[in-house]
Length: 113
Length: 116
Image 1 (cartoon, each protein chain N blue to C red):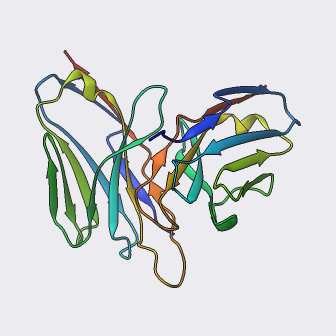
Image 2: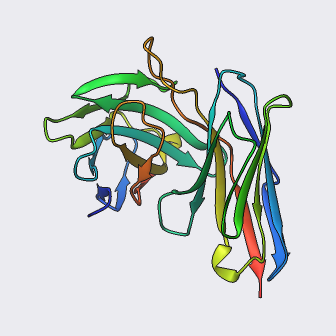
């Protein structure tokens, strides 16, 4: 069974631009969570989607948004990029809403110049 | 909300020695405690987990202990090998109830280096 797939693997953007990241969960998994990983802050929860609905949201500004499609694939968008948005963005899928075991993708490394 | 503290931030051990990583949590309602291993260039991978109704769990060279009273839990790796070198994250989560979903809160990570 294929794992969680995140695309693209690397992104370089400039301040003020926007970016869209994609995540395909493990087949059969219906919940997708997004995390931001930085050296200083560790893994910070962004949001979780289940059945195309955002179920929970972390403490990030409104520039960070996401959505989930009917096939459980998810995208997250960051608008008006800032230098501090440079990070590894990880997507994790799980079997169902609130299920504890998370399966992570390899992430998208975003660099904002 | 939940706060998880993890120590040490870096740990170097000789191959064959044991490694211990400790975490504390703040929310007494948390009842699920997973540990993740992240190798370079990869996402975190679940290696072992424990629920609050269990005090210890072991899987080959890896074990986790939980002290609910003190609100701390630890990862123990015995007979360490070079392939154990990675960043390890602890986490805490409150099981979802009918009232809503609780997110997983991660510790800040421990970089383990096993010296051959």
